[in-house]
Image 1 (cartoon, rainbow, N blue to C red):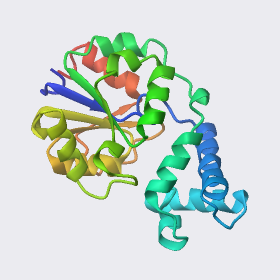
Image 2: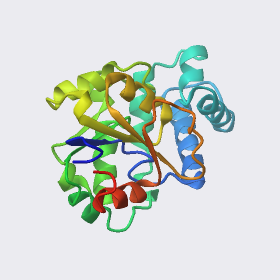
Image 3: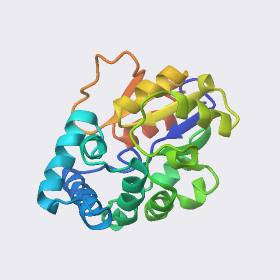
Amino acid sequence: MVLGKNIVIYDLDDTLYNKTEYFADILDTVMAEALVYDLGLDMDVEKAKKLVTESYKIYRDGGEIFYQNYNIKPKDLFIAYHKRKPVEKIVPYDNLLEKIEKVPAEQYVFTASDRYASEKILKHLGLYEFFKNRYYSVEDFGVYKKNENANVYKEFCKKINAKPEDCVFVDDSYSNLEFAKEAGMTTVRIYYHNNSTKDKTFIDYAYKGIESFLEDVLKGKAS
């Protein structure tokens, strides 16, 4: 068991790999290019990128400004962005599969990336075979933008025939964790610099990087 639960659910992006500032900047450019080149936004890429960055800072979603003000449909951007996502630039952790294989719980991935990108990322990280039939995208539940309530987490639990109370949800995004907690899950936040959410009562545990979490699990400190 992990933290007294039988099931561990991992977010994928920025959780099972570290999104560096360099990679984050690339992703902002990629979203801007998807908006301009694929969706026909009447704006140059540089300006679109600035709005993507601003949107993320305000809404924790790089597309929200465009949904509200530029008639961009979330599903269209979701698909266009993930087709362009530069998976090859992700730097995998060493021996992550070996550690995950030893975790004493049933394990899943539930991600805001689409299934196309999720498969590519898992293969790039060396985790695809392990999670082959145990990874899901918000896309599977008809969600194409930042989560706004707990419903998708409840639906996910139904999909895997689990009670939320039996699950640990591991994610870098505190806004996602808020809804996972509302659904009834135990929550673990992964952070990389400073733990900026110490005052958030919906976060049960926090670890600096996925490796520190797995280290505690394997040492029995998070059983």
